[in-house]
Amino acid sequence: MTINVPVRRPGDGDGSVQVHLDPKVQIGQAKVFAVYGKGGIGKSTTSSNLSVAFSKLGKRVLQIGCDPKHDSTFTLTKSLIPTVIDVLEGVNFHSEELRAEDFVFEGYNGVMCVEAGGPPAGTGCGGYVVGQTVKLLKEHHLLDETDVVIFDVLGDVVCGGFAAPLQHAQRALIVAANDFDSIFAMNRIVQAIGAKSKNYAVRLGGVIANRSRDTDQIDKFNAAAGLKTVAHIPDLDDIRRSRLKKATLFEMDETPDILRVQQEYLKLAANLWASGEEYNGRALKDREIFDLLGFD
Figure (cartoon, helix red, strand yellow):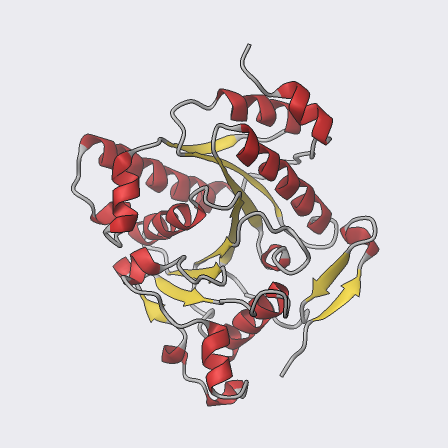
């Protein structure tokens, strides 16, 4: 069993101790996106609908949930699927005893779903879980013909462990609402991505404005930080109801609002696939954010 050892990497930020993944375990040719944002901001809804949008464009998609509550993919699979940690524990961490179908499940429109899970609170590192998940996928050749991988990452945590998907991703997307708290969290994530980009290929891929009628506060932050909003998902009750129905937005009744949001996700997927655009964002000091945001 490969152990991912926390090591001190000066280039990852002053005094940082990062989980160093096995450099031989690479995802391969797929385009890899990591979705970050404040807890409860709608990352799983965003990730699942973006996964479906990619699949509607004919891409072979794998979504990896990186939250211990393992609910990233439940609108795709209609259930809480077993986590990689659960199935590894079931075979006393002898990964050679596992079959692909033990931990990979097919969801809506062919999106393949994995829930990495996580160690019990206070007992381990999420970076190890991410590393073991990618290692298992590689061992079972499940990444060989995958076009897109989406990591849906636990909210608020930008420690070495939950920054681990950034070591695999080419682009990191940040989900934010038009409010101070989510923008403050976004700023911390920009800082984490900037640190990782010193040693890895990951770059900022833009901001997804979510659950927001307006974007004026996000726009202010973007202008100051060198970012851009790449999609705007409004605050619609139909989106909330889709989670309650265990359904993606592409399975809901096609009201005018739902059709508009579907098109926004399809446009986002097409742009991410085609452009590879990146942003050299800079994190603001805390006082800068307090001075910047607010209504005139």
